[in-house]
Length: 101
Image (cartoon, rainbow, N blue to C red):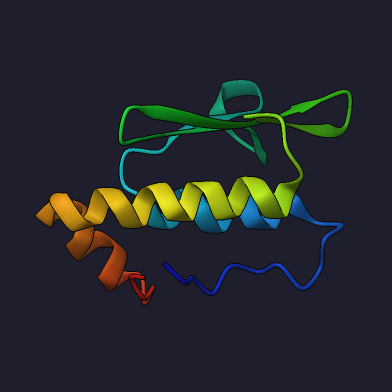
């Protein structure tokens, strides 16, 4: 799968999380006080695996624990595989303007 995620500025992963949570169905998002403000944690359950990103002491902590670009690639591979078997996921992914592998 290919997406148009904002990866040109590696110093702003918060923008990337906003982008992903808007486009991936079933994303679980936590925000600041009263559920307002920037995202503090995002979780994506895709094909039986959970991908989590959360801010801890002003650093982004990823699960599985890999570099941000590798984490994003793993997430997109899992989404692409899942979209091949799930019509609702496929429609959602294609509506976002992403291309399946």
